[in-house]
Image 1 (cartoon, rainbow, N blue to C red):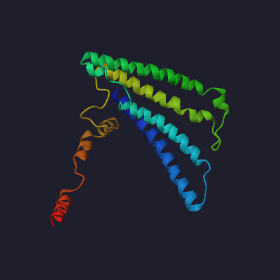
Image 2: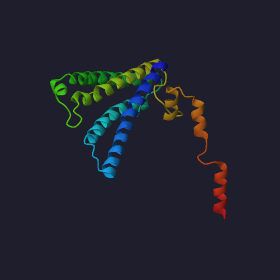
Image 3: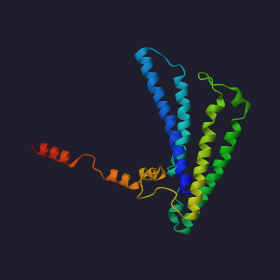
Image 4: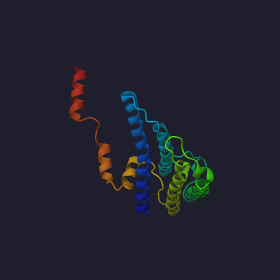
Length: 204
């Protein structure tokens, strides 16, 4: 399960970062060419919008991984032990059912005549290429939700809580030594000599 978590985490991070990074690069290049050289990339705005759509759904997968989606946890606050775990399993199971239903309809939408016959105005891409962001995102969320369900049912921690930061969880999933992360966090922002010099200047 830990290996599956690492592979899935890398796929999620690479896809989300690629979509958002490519959108940023296109935006910068388009602005420089337009205002610096008078060259207008007519397709840039459409490409950026579609990439942002992809990054939104891929970002939702990462948000689910860290349990940062909006949720109502008032009932779980009154439970403890097995009751709390059973409630968490129930919530994870409901999430899986929801993702299966929406994901299935999203995949079916790609085969509709409107999706296959319609093309985008500037990039001339089939509309299903853009709509694929929804089923891809929900499929990845389903895989993540299943992983969370299994971990919760086994009684292991499904999310980073309390003493563990998101940075530490990401490092563990990526195979980075956690001690390196802790060492980096422990390092001061400014060297002691620099801070001492600043204090002496303030005293003068």
